Image (cartoon, rainbow, N blue to C red; front, side):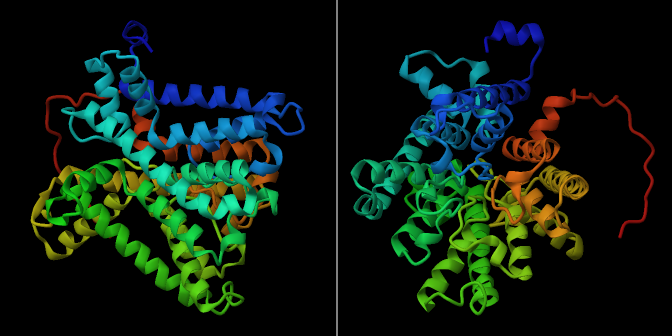
Length: 449
């Protein structure tokens, strides 16, 4: 979008980003509805292809059609491009294209990059985006090579190589799309529940995609020297490690004699680790989510709600938001003046923003759950699970997503879209900035709690 057009319509940076993502969703929906995109060479209803396009670009794995069974190679390629753009970021792709054609990146474009990539400062943003692009491609290529070791002997060279690339990109982008419908429709990675190589490769890709590009860049620059990392990276890695370890132990204890009862001890440990990682926010599964007991379902909901880290391919409220809320709560109990982590003081405005994000997410989930229960043949558990999954851009489901009505799909699409770009970003795009009057209102206390 040109600066002249932006000036004419007075679009903010946030509105430009939202408009660009919406345009891509509509374009993806058009391409996927074409006969060339389906295996039977028939038109796919636009409502279905639009839902799939929104799913892919918002890197959420809700499926109306099994990806391998319904979509042709062209359709699968469009889906891969959509979740690659959704994962790495629309503005990152545009920037790299501009660099490739040797076009100068202006101040306006740099400000867009700053906002779309979640970068904290404007200086060096283009260099950072270049590194992010390179790091992402290297990780995806490495993941594809490891998966090819298993897939090529199983599927043949061309089919195995395509599956390795598709699943590597899908895992790193936390998209949750798979091509295992050739064995059984909507089976995700259930056939590989005992496969250590496939499981660990997918797990590592999910984690690397979910910790955030700023953290990955920090790791590359400082060579795994934790003490030299930024505070953002230290908090992100610490919380991520705690959540993975806690989920790993709890899923094992909850399911070792139930959903995992048919597995060997090593496979139970592997399945528990996979189940701990995938809700934040990949959407793959090696054990059908509907087979889990209620305690595991609730734990999955909690992990989906938290999601990954800021500036990553993941959704949710983000790990840093969680730790800010915990630190702020501890401060309130201790009656200390400021939040401190790793010998650094955190801004009080950050706590207000974290509380606002969580409040908006809770309100959206409650509203969506109520609507799904009212409009669809969903139980409360199914509606809550799918609402959190959509908002967290996870894609796991224990309901009948494929049979949703038009209004039900619309609720899911809105949740996915808002979850991908962030509710704060969406509200900033819809609401005009308000300037506070230069005056102080009278202060009065109220009771809380």
